[in-house]
Amino acid sequence: MSTWVKPGDWALLGLFGVLVCALALHAWWSPAGDHVIVRAGGKVFAEISLARDGLIQIPGPLGQTSVEVARHRVRIAHDPGPRQLCVKQGWLSRAGQAALCLPNQVSVEITGATRIYDSLNY
Amino acid sequence: MKPHSHTISLPVTEQDRRVAGYAALAIGLSLAEAALPSPIPGVKPGLANIVVLWALLQHGWRTAAWVALIRVFAGSLLLGTFLGPGFWLSLCGSLASLLGLFIAVRLPRSLFGPVSHSLIAAGFHISGQLALAAFWLMPGSAVLGLAPLFAAAALVFGTTNGLVVARLVAPLTRAGAQSAHA
Image (cartoon, rainbow over all chains, first blue to last red; front, side):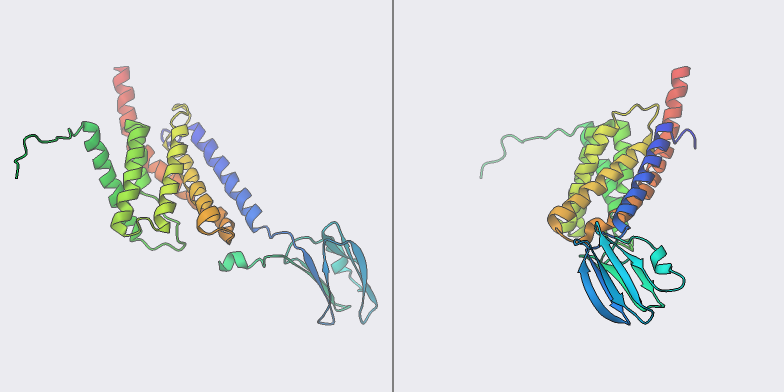
C-alpha cells in the first residue's frame, strides 16, 4: 500500500477533502436572507426587509416584544417571556432561521430570495 | 472506368495500434458503465479514466489525450448522445482533465503517484463539466449547489481509480527498480 500511495498523494487527498468540505459548507450553509416575517398570535404581523435597520414593537398576551434589525441581521431585543429563549438566540441572518417567543406568541423567520429546499428538490 | 493506377496507403504505426487498443478498452468500459444505474445523473466512476491514466504513465500525455478524446467521440456515437448535452459535458470534462493531467505529469514522480494524477484529473473533469453546465447548458439554475456532491464523488472515484492504476503499475516500477539495481 505504501508503495502505491506516495506522500504527495496523501497531501493532495487531504487537500481535496478540505476542498469538498469547504464547498459543502459554502453551498449548503443556507444563503443570507433578505426579509424577515414577524408573526404574532399565528398571524403575519409584519414583513420587514433586513436592509433597513430599525426596531419594532409587537404586542402579545404578556406585553411588548421588541424585534431589532441591524446590519442585515435580526434579533429579539426584548421579550416579556419568563425564560428568554428567543432573546438568547441572538442575531439571525440566514434564510430559514427563526426565533420563537412562545409565551408571548411572537415569532420571526428569515426568508431568502431562494427557498432553501429548492436545491434539494432540484 | 480506369483501374487504380496507384493506391494511397496510410502506414499504421505502432503508436496508432497502441492508441486504438487503449481507446477500444476505454470505450468498452464507458459502455459498461453507461449500463450501470446511477442515483444522481452525471455521477459515474469514470472507469475509462483508468485506461487514460495507464496510457499517460506508460506512453505520455499525447497518447493519453488521443485515447481520452477518441473515447468521448466514439463512446457518444455508440450511446447515441453525440452532439447532445451529455456529449458536450463529456467532451468538456475530458478536455479539462487532460489539461489537469498535462500539469500533473510534471509533478515529481518520487512524491506524486497515480492517486495524485487521478485526483487532479477527476477534479479538473468535474470543474469543467460544472462550468459548462452552470454557464452554458443550464445558466441560472441551482446546478452549482450540487458542486459539493460532484466534488465528493470526484474524490471517491478519483482515489479508487488512482489506486487501481497504482496497483497496475506497481509490478512494472518494481521490476524497473530491480533491473536498475542488477
